[in-house]
Length: 110
Image 1: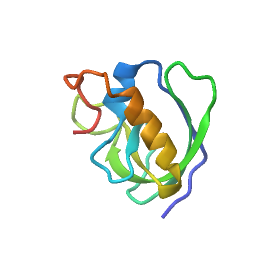
Image 2: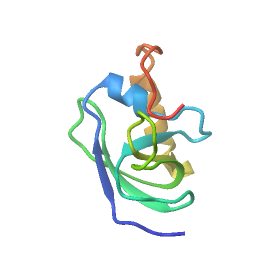
Image 3: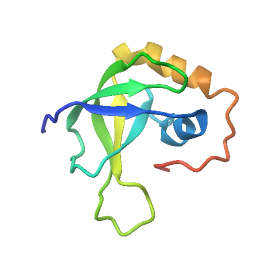
């Protein structure tokens, strides 16, 4: 298991948040576009800024999804970060922001 430096992600709008959020994970998670190689299980620290917010939230989590930059697909390279239990308030805040979002927005993961 590798430990990498902190990543920063600013989510510009609700449509992007909907595409990046991973609700199928029990504690929630988010897709982070990156070309840096990661492996499943790597621990990461994420500095996350949600739409219409200026405050960055520090999130620690584990890599549970990898779309490598050399993948022969149309998908954006990056990683899925599974939130930890102490990030429950963040998960709830994201899900509240998404309650009125359209479910037809394509996802970065599934």
